[in-house]
Length: 227
Ligand SMILES: Nc1ncnc2c1ncn2[C@@H]1O[C@H](COP(=O)(O)OP(=O)(O)OP(=O)(O)O)[C@@H](O)[C@H]1O
Ligand SMILES: [Mg+2]
Picture (tube, rainbow, N blue to C red):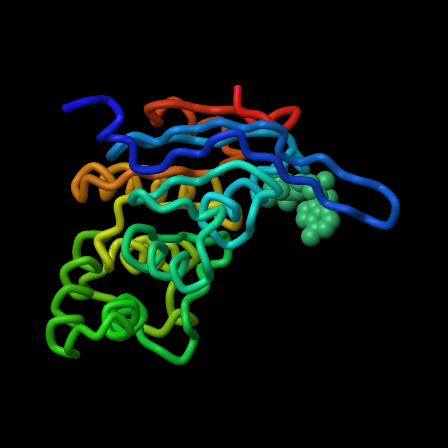
């Protein structure tokens, strides 16, 4: 197998600026990046260095001024909205700093939701969601609402939900930013285990220096490029 064939996400020569009044803020300046299948990579960098901007561009939620983001042979930078949405739901999962669980739905329903949206029948979706929640250690919390879960448990549900669609890539922007150090370490460890078991690559923005040694690779965003 060639090296090329195991890259699940490739960013080429990304440029992005924000215009604020008369001022141009350069954020990405010719950035290149490749994520290999099942690779676990941490993104670090100073506040304002552009990490969230980069994650949005890699997720196809924002477009670069120029450059390409290849996922599944499709360039998200030039694809239309429907195509980008399709690639996101087929190949990507997301974990956010604020869990983004639906408050009126149980843990089980939150994890089953992306599967239901894909058209999978209720029983199968719930069976898979139950299995995923067991894997993240929440077999006894299936019917809890997000408001009845601890912060760490909510992020575990979010990890299970991100994996529901069998993504090749999980993108997470400071997924442990709201957690205490011990809980954060447990959630990062869980993400490593789940990523390895599901063969899913995992790209995480984190400010937590303690978490870095556990990643395959750490890249630093500075001056618009990854170092
Ligand atoms: N919509 C926008 N309009 C104008 N400027 C923006 C916009 N979004 C971000 N910026 C600017 O772009 C730069 C990068 O922002 P970004 O949120 O990507 O940084 P970050 O590395 O994620 O920071 P943090 O670690 O604080 O989350 C910042 O200087 C920010 O002020
Ligand atoms: Mg950010």
